[in-house]
Amino acid sequence: MDNSYFLSQVSLTFTDGFKEYREDLSAVLLTPEKHLWLGSDETSTIERLSLVDGDNFANHDRYRVAEFIDLPAPEEKEIDIEGLAYTDYYLWLIGSHSYKRKKPKSDKSDEKNIQRLAKIDTEPNRYILGRIPLVDGKLFSSCPHPQNPDILLSAAKLELTPTGNLLMAALADDPHLGFFVKAAIPGKDNGFDVEGIAVCQKRVFIGLRGPVLRGWAVMLEVELETSTPGIMTLREIGQEGKSYKKHFLFLNGLGIRDMHLYGEDLLILAGPTMDLDGPVQLYRLRNAVNLTENTLHYPEFLQDIPYGNRVEHAEGFTLFENVTGIPSILVVYDSPAKTRLFGDGGVMADVFRLG
Image (cartoon, rainbow, N blue to C red; front, side):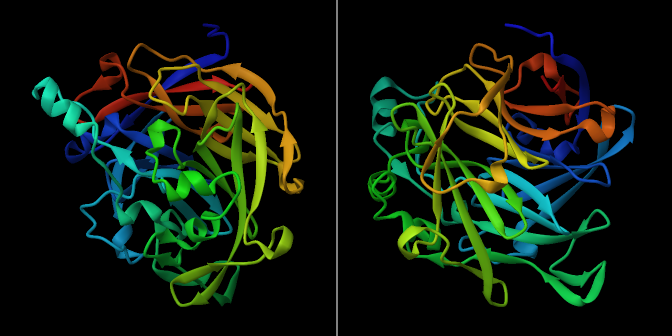
């Protein structure tokens, strides 16, 4: 594996209560105030760390999403936050929108573990697509817009339905994705699985880890508008009055694991849709903010990201040049190697130069 792009490691120090979740980081975002916002696929909270010196983040604060957005299930049930984005004083978050299959456990017999593999379920909180006002490094349920006090910023979520939310309902009859939505295929079985979000003005781009269709990854595009306080609905933006657009990306057969806007381009972290270690690669989709609907795209390959054997799964990244002073990204890992862990709440992240 080519490590020529590796620059350094950065320490992330959480409080003791986050010890078990530091190994399940699934989303990361650096905002202009140099706060690092993180999501875990096992919680319904958003974590905030602050830059305390040149290459370390600490001073952990935890925000309960339920304080700002009404959740359909108790907050003990995970949102499975898989993407974070920031624009115009809003922090956006998105859950996986996926089903999951129970995993075998080492303390169970083969018979019990085979029974576990037959159990599939989902959780209502996983279908959250929402935004929360973010001003001066803090989250609010509502507050005046810092540059225009006549505008009220307010937390909101996409309207939920008995089968998830309005997006899932809209996709139910889609010729490419409808089967995966209605058949309730688990995410790690190449089922429907969200793992990235990017926002440009009113346009929300949603990256799918799965399904990957004959080697093609899928990115959705929607526009949201407030219908009632705290609730957003989908606008008609697609062909034939649809409320979404589809973009097909060839990522060497990989699915989307995270993505961030980089000017008018989109940086995409790509990895396996199935339960595999790698490969993990970084791509650049140029002029992403001007994509046309139902088109095939071949993003530019930038570099490989290292991965391990059943460990070190790159799960999220964020732009990091505001800290390093050069084009770079910070990467966090699910199932990090034990050598990354320190103390009762610390874990190391990697910084890579952009190729």
